[in-house]
Image (cartoon, rainbow over the protein chains, first blue to last red):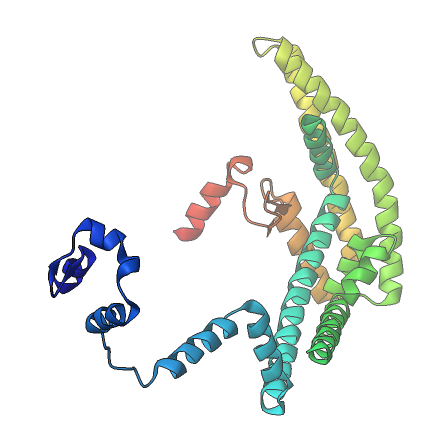
Length: 136
Length: 178
């Protein structure tokens, strides 16, 4: 309410006329300071304000991809993280390569079994030729 | 930072090499089989644990059978074309259709007989257990109509009955169930 009154140009001496506001240059600086001082809001200072700001800045900086990568690299360079990470990577590679190899091998042998059956059977040959002619 | 990146890149390269090495070590035998003259015979060698002597005999049998097989196949293609033409041009079953059908059936029978002969020739080279297993496999997969090993559209291998090609198979399955 007071704030609205102030904005409207209301003072302790009553509402200032427009001419008085527009002619504020006439108001001496001491009086102006008094008026402003009266209207100053005195909020209690937050004791954690600075630390909160710095924490926020640190969090935002850390969330960038480059920083995350840097953090990861830093972690991986520590022996207590590097050894398990390397071990896990080796185990994963061993398992996936073995599984892939075994599956490919089985598939290749099955295809060769099929090729053998087809190679000794004239009817299979003919069917293969017929189907290829149909596809053409 | 740069040092860490170099170490990680080298580690990844090393892991990729490890992957490739293990994969090629596991698939070494199939890769070698694929590079041979008759990869399908390499499967036979492995499946039935053939000795070099047995393998060379079977290879000779296979090459001899291949010539017969191609001739039979060629004749069968011609007869099949004739049958197709006759069936598409004649609206009813007349003598020509029956002749073409009989020739087609006879040629297929010849093919089956040639394969049966080859099957016994090959199995005579093997030891008894392998020979029995080989004959059973060939008979089950190729001689019984409708039992054809095949690879489906997704590249998967199957040996099950192809129902539409084996009208008698349902009867045999039902008799098995009974």
